[in-house]
View 1 (cartoon, rainbow, N blue to C red):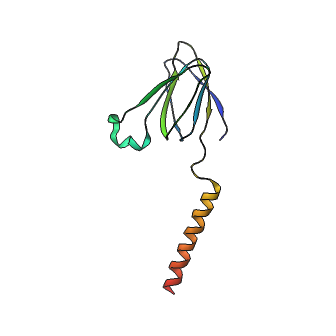
View 2 (cartoon, rainbow, N blue to C red; view 1 turned 60 degrees about the vertical axis):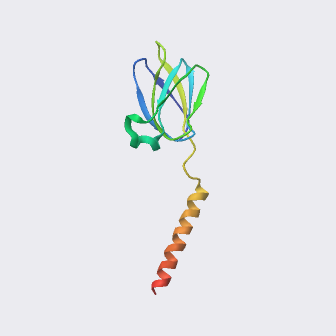
Length: 113
């Protein structure tokens, strides 16, 4: 996925799922970014939330996958540049896992004959 720009109005919350390594840069105005580690979702409201303000010209990179709420931190519309994180697995890793899986299937079939 390519980087894109998004507008955020005051008092309007937009929520989106972001991968680990995704970046949010404030191009015009300040943004309030709120999220928590997705692996702690089973704790419901007891899981601690991270809430930061990204000021104009600053960039914040997510350290883990999360459902992120973004809103304008000021009285005017803010514009952000969203850079999606890297894919979960590289093509090389995916092919390697596929070959290992096929090798296991072949050995299972060989034992049964």
